Length: 394
Image (cartoon, rainbow, N blue to C red; front, side):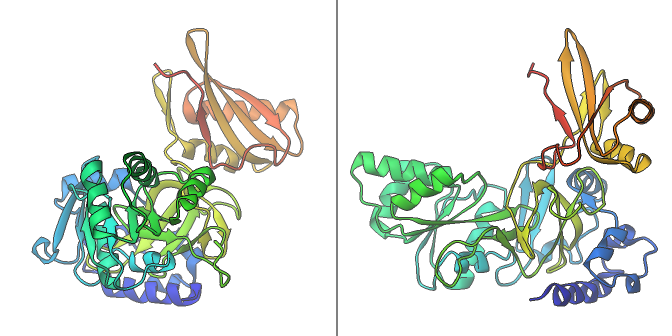
């Protein structure tokens, strides 16, 4: 599906949902849907952050007035850490996992051992529903119980593993040490933990072709790895057709500059639990059109300095007030027994007057004094970090 077709489907769906979801209507406010002419216009709508979602659900249980069906219409209800509750919509593959499994080479009839958690959170169901939609039997293993799991793999001979990549390594290592044959495992779709190149290489040397997906408990599968026509892994992860994904500057509602690392914001309007511009709290960047670089860390960078919280949005505002600045990065550290902070600001024309003006704006916005270090353009890391806390852990 092209970006244009995906957006047209989204706008049509918004029209259907308007008036059915009170929370979505509040989020849209007075916006005329006719103003949404392309994906870039989504920036006219405020993002919905996970912390806000928790407060909404507490105020209007169970789902913060976002659901467009009664609770009894959902086949499964989940509870995740942080007081967040997720309903599973009815229907085939409600979490969008089937395409990720197919892209990993999984075909109908292959047995899948699913090691994502089935306890309260939807992780296990996300992958299970995709496997069942493909016509694959599922062993609902969940995490842990390694000895029993290895015995089940040896006996039932699944060819596909779903779960965290580090747990797959544990299973393979323990089976090898115990002399148990788990060579039936040939493919893996992993998520929920980092997959460094060294770990992927080790898993594939063990005979398990390993591909990864990026998924969240709220949204299901957001993006997944795919292979080219030659079978080689393509860079980045393909965004699920059912979703519209944006990258915004952390701590703001605004699109990040092209190529910059920022917070992943996802719109998913399928099913009976629509989420519009939902900020995941995860960092990523575009690898190419329609392909994310994958998970690159967490976007929540607020720091408490001298008893006051400093938020990324405040640092972004400094850049708006001083357009001669480029990227900004606030570094918080300890000097002696006191908190201290330095704002590193890119500029083409460093001078003392600018430094003093920026320091005054920093103090006005945060109510804290801080140093300003003007640096050359493009000299700060492109890692999505606006606030870096270098203070030692207590």
